[in-house]
Length: 225
Image (cartoon, rainbow, N blue to C red):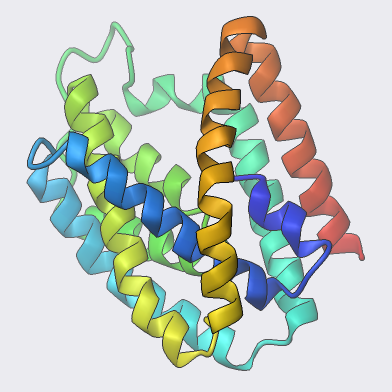
């Protein structure tokens, strides 16, 4: 989540989101294999249908927006994401996750799933940060751990797949970006292994606070620059 705003400091925002889509989609392919058909179908369907409209709307923004304004949008989304993640201990129980006073899962109406998908589509297209919206929609449904991870994985896969033709029409891909994405794949794997190693050595709360601090700081810098 920190990569997009961090890279945006050093290169074109349009270049960054095009590159990151290829990297994210490649990791989605590998992740989906482990959770095939173990997701909550209704949630995936509603989120994806709603996300299509969100992707279309965000693509219209990307079509005409300047790189400078796109950087500010990415910065704003990064700051919002960091704040919501920092406040997760306060809002997560209110959504019904592990809350003893809520014995049953919440059943969302169709329009609520479509709205969540729309927001996820917009944030994902502009800054690759639609995941938090998806999590906030899924938590109250109290899915099993496997179903929760499978549903988020399937949703991210479909989101990124749908974004590919829109990014292509917006000229966000090039042969140079494709070659760069291919070259970076081994480093993505190395980053995952490094993250696992750090999680084993650094307390989770401290690690997440450090990441969120840098995410907020980079987002704020983009907003003010």
